Length: 371
Image 1 (cartoon, rainbow, N blue to C red):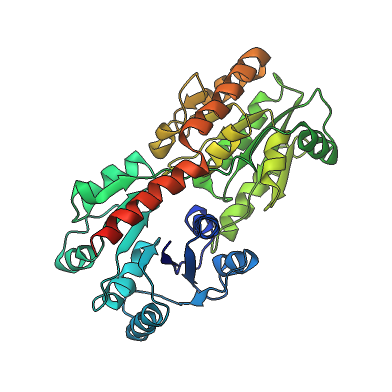
Image 2: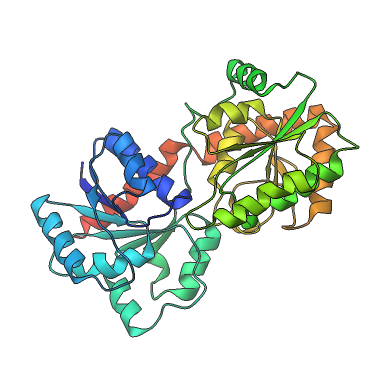
């Protein structure tokens, strides 16, 4: 087993940051010694502490941090770190220099795509120190190879995994959650989960609710998520549409919730109308809970959803197509059941937590063997 430093100095809270805490917990359960490093006072810092870790504080802003480089180099030596796993590309400007005098492998997970090429001299120097890059989806792997100074043999796709002991069909949770929300067995419950921002498709979801009201009077719509750091005004605009579009009696904005498995069980259809998505962790969580999904056919989603088998795919920003797909499933309970069963089978086969850990540990062993 190895001593692994997991680094993410992002002060925000989203899929990347959530993954760091989740991964750290499960690698520790595998027997590895995990040393997390994150921005002090950040949501990730609080999450790691709740998980039982004592994160090392690394506050970074911009790119040049001589003190942080020195501090990180000292931690690496004092704690006898075997491997560093970084999750935020910007952190490499501190991590790579700190590793210059130490033969410690560096693995980077790319959670997001890059718009501008990174092939200048400085980036070439930085990425020479990166031993392996993990892409969370095929679209991200292609983006890395198109924009970064790194060869294909040093890039692998490792999909996120879902803890199937937490995300599974549960009739008791379904009943209690629906009772709490005031739903009867006759209600058709649709839900969306994610950061409360326009790019996640919340406006399309609300427009869908407004349009489908006459055809599906029994439908109810759950909004689960909160504003990201610095995006409060956009979130307020989205929530304002509930009142403006007169759907406040059928739409339930629940904000940030910790009982996601329970709320997924309460749903009949999970809707994911994101405009662009590097992967879509919540999709595999919904599918693991045996929910048929209606999703945008964008980017990393194509690694997850098999159209008309485990769910229905629609073009991003296309409310007409979104409504049609939801109506199709709403009117056909047998199709919903068939898709829900296939969705869970698909996750069991390709997106189980154990598969993710096995693939990642294989990369760790590969880079450690070269030291």
